Image 1: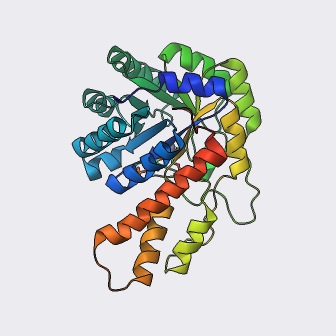
Image 2: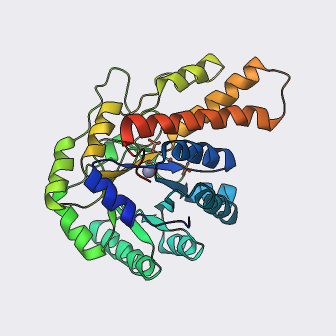
Image 3: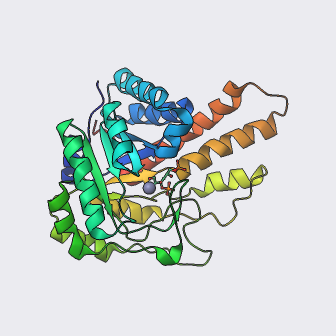
Length: 311
Ligand code: G3H
Ligand code: 13P
Ligand code: ZN
C-alpha cells in the first residue's frame, strides 16, 4: 500500500473512539520494531520524523524505509513531520514525499501562528498532504524546542474554533498537562491532565481530531532495566496509562510517543551488552532493542490506543 495522509485514519479513529499511535523514528530498527507490532495487531500507524531526526538519518533514507514499510505490510501508514519549525522545512518534506506535516507555531504570538499555519496548509493541501497545528505550549525538552515548566501554557479553548477555521488545519495539538521527555512530573507529584480543557475544546470543535504530544507513559519496566544496567534514569515519570486511554476514547485521535521507544531500545542494548560482554556485532544488541520496541508498541495498541484490527 502507498503511504496515506491522516484524513481517513482520523475520521475512523474519531468515530470509533480510539487513537492512532504516532511514533518517532530515527533508524531502521525503530521503524521495523514499530511496524512489526502494527502488522501483528493489524493497526494503522503514523511514523513521524522530527527536524533533528531528519538531519541525523537524512530525508531520503527515512523516506525510503517508511515507504517500504507501507508497501511490505499493506497497512495504512502516514509519514509525518513532527514539530515542523518553518514553512521551508514543511515544504521540503511535502516535496519529498511526506504525507502529513506539523507546523509548530505554538511559541509564536497568536496572529503569527495563524499566518504561518495557514501558509503551510495552503501548500500542503494543494499536494494532498494533511497538516497538524498547535495551540498552547507543553513543558519539556526536545532537541530543538525547550520550554521551562513555568512558561508552559494550557490551550485556551476560546481560541480553537477561530484557529482551526482561519488556518484550515486537519488536526490540532493542544496542551492539557502532558510534556516532552522522560521526566514529566516530580516524584510525589500527582499527575493530572486537564480533561476539562479537552472537553471544552471538543464542545467547540465537534468531530475534530485532537493530538496529544508528550504522551509517553515512561514504562517503568524499561526504566528499571536501564537503571539496573548502569543507566541513571531514577525519577523518570510519565503520563498514567488510564488517562491516555480515556483521552483516546474522547477527541484525541493521535498520541505521540518517542521517549518510551528511546527507553525500550536503550534498555535492550544495555541489558544485552551487560549480559554478553564479548558481543560486538550490532545486529545482536540492536536486535534486542528492536524486539523491545515491538513489545512497547503492542502494549500501547492493546492497552491505550485501541487501534488493533482497524487497519
Ligand atoms: O517531541 C519531539 C520528539 O521527542 C523528537 O525529539 O527533536 O530530539 O528528535 P528530537
Ligand atoms: P514523549 O517525549 O512523551 O515521548 O513525546 C513525544 C512527542 O510529543 C513527539 O512529538
Ligand atoms: Zn511533540
